[in-house]
Image 1 (cartoon, rainbow, N blue to C red):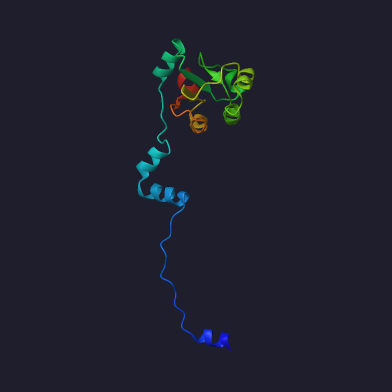
Image 2: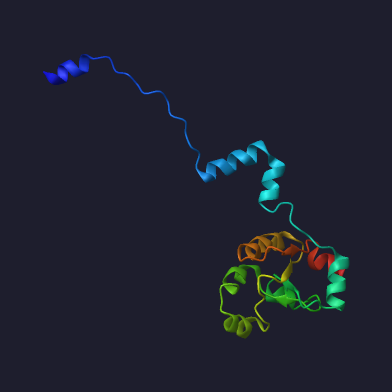
Length: 155
């Protein structure tokens, strides 16, 4: 009987509550509303260096700047920019998770500290753009991309 009485009462709905967007949804909203701001927040456009910068770096190495070739070893066999170190893009994340000793044993040079400048390059720029994001995710906020890559260097 109580159920019958309650069922007969008019139902009032609470006024709609404002939704608090999740951080993911908020970032998506920023992307839609302010494309230039979202590119700046995500690191786009990629900080880049040109051939002249890399030529200077290869002829006069800077102890605060590390040049990393992210091509596969089979590609590096055809040539590498002087002073560059090879860490394939697929191994880059795992490489920066290694201890300093493991890193040196595996790659033959000291694991850079995050206050160093890192420049990544590949054959033509696609893999180095991905590598740049990996390097930045490990705290190398001064990292840059030589997007011209091996094709630009060897031309």
